Amino acid sequence: MDDAESASRAGRRRAAAAAGMRLFSPEYYALCAGGGMLAAGATHLAITPLDVLKVNMQVNPMKYNSIFSGLNVLVKEEGPSSLWRGWGGKFFGYGVQGGCRFGLYEYFKKRYSDVLVDSNKSTIYFLSSASAQIIADVGLCPFESVKVRVQTQPMFAKGLVDGFPRVYATEGLSGFYRGLLPLWGRNLPFSMLMFSTFEHTVDFLYQKVIQKKKEDCSTIQQLGATCLAGYISGAVGTVVSNPADNIVSSLYNKKAENIIHAVKSIGFRNLLTRSLPIRIALVGPVITMQWFFYDTIKILTGLPTTGGLPRELEEANI
Image (cartoon, rainbow, N blue to C red; front, side):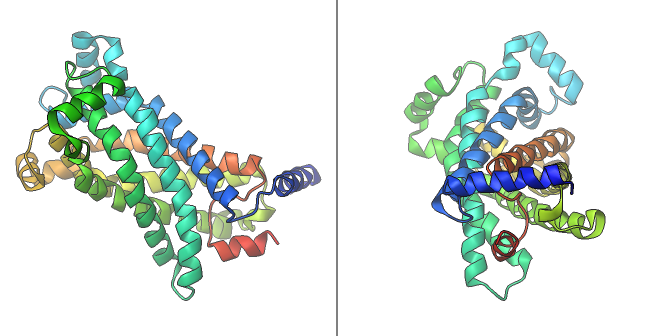
């Protein structure tokens, strides 16, 4: 690490300290939540057209049977604007989810690490991510409910403003949480594997590839490790969560009355494979960019990038 990089990092840490930013302080968790909200909201907004196609492929696989032909059908029948249906649900809904997912993950990781001192790292990562995701999905579910309907039912509503009252008028409060259980079924294993894979991959990269402690690495090296670990963690989580993602789309579009009916109508093989290629194309880059934005915000405020147990971070920043 050269002197300029060392001085720059020291300057950022002094700035963070001067602003009262301490690791695991209320301000720290607020920053993590805000960073997660911006990262998740912006990245999900950017891939709205592919998300519109993904949901339609899940609901009507005969009509939308591939990525390129599906996009052509959507544009030809409903115009280019159809590719941006549900953008509000993507931006605000996944912004709320991202804020809770990242901010609460940091919070729970600290709490579980303090209580479960003798537990291995994977246990801490699994418990922290699961606890954060349960709360995050409660915040996401109403937005997801409206988004899926808007994307697959052009006459239902134009967006969140008219979509929310329409759902409430026709189905009541329960309509917003119709898919909460399969949403947990999709996002809990995804989040648990995503965070755990990310943490272990980052640890492996610093120990075996870069062969330096994180605090001794340049900003480029740290963000490079973040991006590579982010892509790997996103791809792993996607494969595991794909069956529940298909069930969510089926329930919200009333293609099935309940989870058991959805599984029977879709079929076991299709649960595993339907829309999987486009989900991998979507989720890998999205998770990579989320981690990149999130850790960039941390670096700019003088905080260490994500990775490691709280006690390890505290020792490294004494």
